[in-house]
Image (cartoon, rainbow, N blue to C red; front, side, top):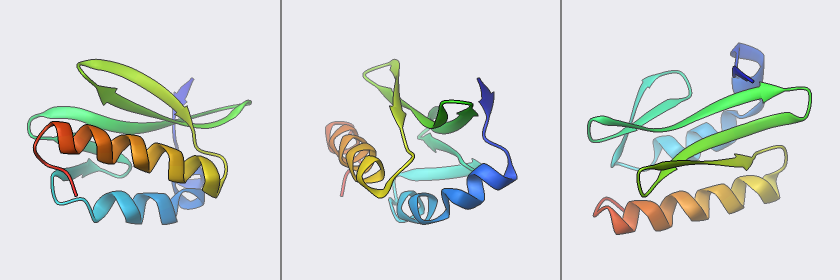
Amino acid sequence: MKHAGPEALLALAPLLAELRQRPALREKSPGVFYLKSKAFAHFHEDPAGLFADVRIADAWARFPVNSRREWTQVLAEIDRTLRGAGGGR
């Protein structure tokens, strides 16, 4: 599964805009977010669709992000994780 390219990131623009509003996260390169000094979230594309990899409790979890409903689910999980890390909304 390859990292999301420019076209995939364009399709995810509203989701990326939401992530950019989380002050605890820093976007080091397009679509690659860090929490403190650790990679926290990035995106992949493959024939099955688009996916977000999010670090939760020092392990990566993969979430589909092909619809606004899925975006809402991944954002909720990210916010839960950020609250637990002291950087939440």
